[in-house]
Image 1 (spheres, rainbow, N blue to C red):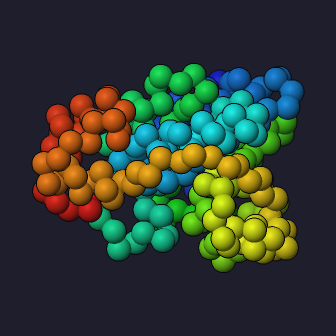
Image 2 (cartoon, helix red, strand yellow; image 1 turned 120 degrees about the vertical axis):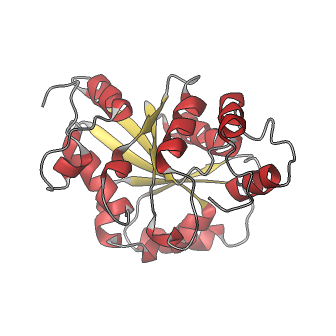
Length: 239
């Protein structure tokens, strides 16, 4: 494989040729080629919109686990959010690109946007495993709420072998040790990162925008500019 050319996601999934390129993934593939051991964090989500809490979580994971890069993978339609109205996937990707532009360790990816239908983490990790050099170690970043449901995710056994899971959470939650032990008992490799997370949610950002309230400092300035320019979330809809 050419170090600077990553096959499209639909090709990697066995669905024929794919014309679109994923600049973020291509940049990482180029860096990883011939670099020896390379630790890649994968942070998936709808990012509707991406906010400072997302960025802080990714940075805490990068620092604690020695990640060379973190790839933000925008999900067009995750299986657990089938009923939620979402902003246009291309716009959410653009906001992610704007948000990560100031951090050389961050990249935004269109990997899941090129795949039809519902998106599953196991499919995404298989694609990454197939298009990246074998020296790349995958670390999937999650929060404590995801740790609780992780053993029930689709293809849980495959997930456990495809990546190490990095749980970024506030210290001292009463059930965290039990949830961690349960996930490890199912075969998951889980790294725990204690972090002073920012109490921000995308739903709160959307609500404030719909009510005409300020979200400055809740989202990066470039993301705020795009929200205001395009009138996103002003109608009070979830997406």
